[in-house]
Length: 391
Length: 208
Image 1 (tube, rainbow over the protein chains, first blue to last red):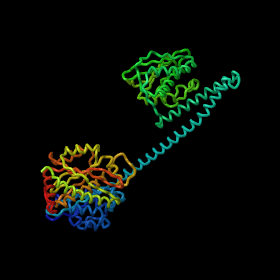
Image 2: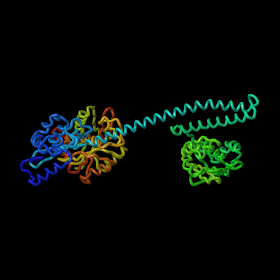
Image 3: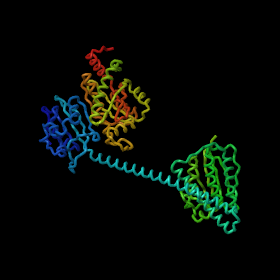
Image 4: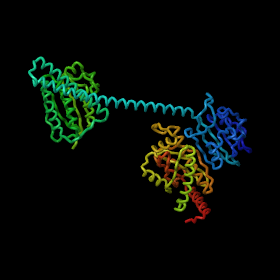
């Protein structure tokens, strides 16, 4: 690069050579033009990116070298710089015209950001520095980021549509199954109870099996609908202040028949009168029913399932304890996962949808509560829920 | 002199709005769509008062562009927007429909260019009307609370005063509120006042 300085330069020859080396070592274009827009400085980067030698550029008008930029925002900014002393930034995003430059390595057109700054040499009229930065890599990165974001948004949209479709399908299928199943159970009950005539014992036993399994199917459908409501955020709660004692008394009353069918009983320990919680009683009774029916199923025949309440700081703990086989160590971490049951053989024998604890956890957590358990196999298994006490 | 009188403020507001008009014309031409710009209110206050006034708007963190200017009066000029508004403005100007979480490097640069055009036009208009010679620096992108941004711009001395303008942007049928702020030291306020007085004399307007 040949560095042309104005007459009466303040630089010595050595300083001029050093300055030339510095400008040539810069990664980016540097052009300095005088008040007539003639090129004074043209660094190596400009030479390599434009293919215009410094000897061709020097003393030529910048917009003679690039006539396609005459009248462009670049020229307007140069004029503003020379006349008023204003500096300008011309961003890539808003740039309509740019210098026809190519990458030094790949000879591909480059994306640019242009900085135009005034400079006032001693004893001279205002000059202008035009700096050009290659932002091709940044533009490519941003383009990739937008593509990735666009793909992620499309995938998310597709997933949401699929989830909505699944939810709608579950809802329709479940309702379509529930209606005929209810009718089947009603008919089985009528036949089994001899309403349409005496039924031989063997037939009666088979009808009982059919009724139990129809009941299990109905419970499963009901749980699937509940899960769907939770997952789609459509589960609604009607919170009311209620005494813990009243909640547990209702729970015992509602599950007593189930316990008797399994030849066990519930023992409700004394509860203080002044303990209140804010709950949706139907939903919380559903949780209690799930915990109590599980305990009744696993409690050895003739045994007693214990229900107790303890105040723990700002929470009340409701515990349901059985003395059955308990929960194997390796299964404990999966207790609240969908369709997880400790022993599938046992489950089939004892019933259960595999969704009860998942739903219970969702309900308790919607009450700002916690559900958990301790299990010492064949001795004592305690499921508990902690709920915030309200005045 | 630490303050401008009401008449001087009126004349200054007029000059600033001429600059806003020029900036709007430049932006409209550049973007190929209609851009409206106006500064309906102008206030002159201390830096502390400006921080309080801006915080009262409830705008939260802001981002924008800052650039120095130097001449018969010198200081720092800024164009500031609440962060969400700056995202909206840049994407309207860039005609970008895909939202990303924050401003990208290239979007920051685009906002800097918009700020540069507006601030250059406004300062250019003051220089022209008040027959001053004022040059500007390159813009730099700023982000933070109003206080952070104003404190960073107040290297011009503790006695700096702030000229605060609320700016209404109208782009593609969207209205976006921003602020133009000038931080000036006492000597610059005198320089500005002298320029305004000279302009008023030229127009035959009586000084108060």
